Image (cartoon, one colour):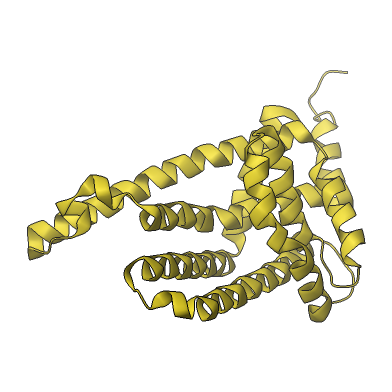
Length: 262
């Protein structure tokens, strides 16, 4: 599949894949929200607590451990997606997955913002870091895994950019609703309970770094299961190839109906 129509079909299939495992998708969202809440809390504590600078090392360590746990969980869930899409093979090696993910994923904190400056390059770089978890069975060396992940990210570029553009549009919709929901909740709290907050006392000043981290990070956490499912389907098409059932369905569509004129 290539082009915009292929991208739309890809997202529809990704939604269906997430719907097949709602508890797993919800757990991914919960882990993402926990990581975002931890980052927002650390940033707010550093701004308000004069003694927080002395504890910044422990805060950074806690966030790093939470991030590492999230990366390992993503690799395990990606293995589950591969199995659901018909991939065989032995069970993944947890130790190897830790090694590979910790070798590459932290670089995404630098590479993704830099790729965002080029706009078009962001789609392939984001796909690369997602593929690192998706393809990782713990048995490849980090360099070999990175080559496979980059090769898969470069396949069907129109499909990739179209799908990620639609995901970005969906993300803007979710972000707008989150921002509106927070302001509405603050207004309701003031109207019903008489409780003032920064959002009601000084709305313009409330849009600070912590507020943006919460809103943008929550949007990312909500979209993350759909993003991973989309790349799992791209892997299924590009690396695993069509399965027998898929070929049978395609052949059935091409076969003439019994009443068709010869």
